[in-house]
Image 1 (cartoon, rainbow, N blue to C red):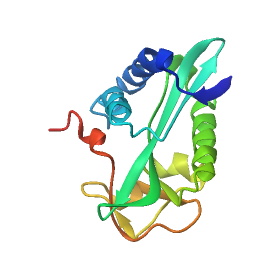
Image 2: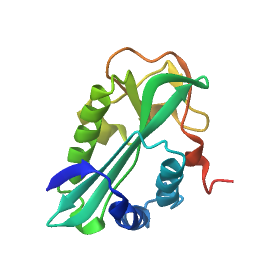
Image 3: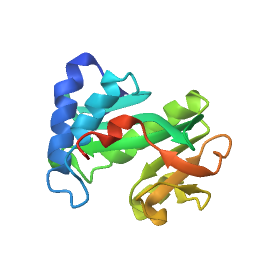
Image 4: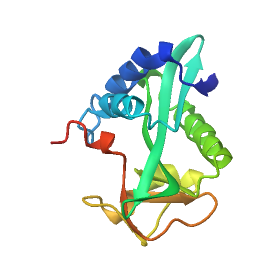
Length: 167
């Protein structure tokens, strides 16, 4: 398996990955592919990586700017992340996360946040931080990984592309 930055030729494969990966997900509104498209159109995909196996793109992860109290603070949001169902549970998602976090460290990011399963993301060092909140998100699933400096305390928001299809 090979992890690399997305290319224009990958866009349709990335859409298909997120559609398939979230088709039956109980907490998804099946908008992940549209979020990635929206981030790309807004030039807000800071890091966008694909996993390629035998010439086929089988996984994708996106990292985009996150904000605390409406201000930029060198913090990024992880997500969406998706792997085609036949390739799940093979470590592809973990490799994508690790490669993306390495890329963020290279950008001198202060922290990375996500909304996700603490049991899964704790392996990468993500933890709930009581100093951070997100409207409508339970504290236990808003997770943060400090990369350089601790992010400021306050309300976290994602790029507006994350609101696509929610209104």
